[in-house]
Length: 116
Image 1 (cartoon, helix red, strand yellow):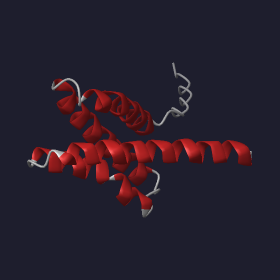
Image 2 (cartoon, rainbow, N blue to C red):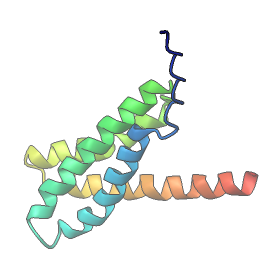
Image 3 (cartoon, one colour):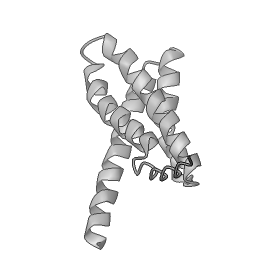
Image 4 (tube, helix red, strand yellow):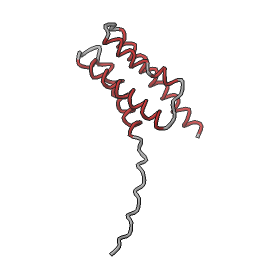
């Protein structure tokens, strides 16, 4: 008895790298504000920034979408590294540049909506 081959499942349309990046980034925006009030938030913010950066590198590589502006997007991670090296202002640099990236993507999203 021969069995018919099973139909192929369609590939998932969800880019989990992008989802991970977005969730970690938005969470970092919220937790980053808390790092000025509660001590544990600084460590959580730092971990979220590293996760967001790794996810960004992954999906940029996967989709061959690396552009010059992505180097600017690494500033929050550099700020976290500077903070852990002893320069406390590094965490503020990370938080401010994260907000700049967040506002940039909001503006680009609105521009994209207007174009369609």
